[in-house]
Image: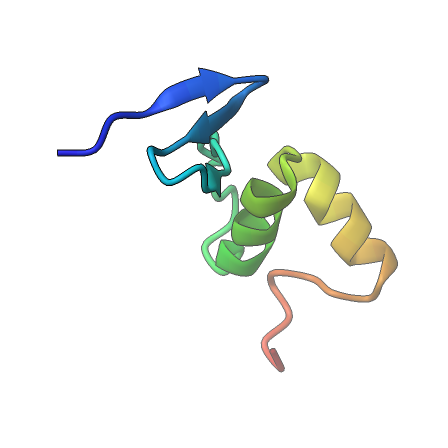
Length: 65
């Protein structure tokens, strides 16, 4: 069984590999899984990432995606 240590909000395993500590992001639209996933990885909220996506012309309700 592995032992983990928390240092500066990073979780470090025995081997010294850093593991990103992710916080849950709730998907706010039926087809917003991509927005939620990217928000999770970047440490942003769903509304923050949704606004960024929308400025790039990406909308979760776009049926062509």
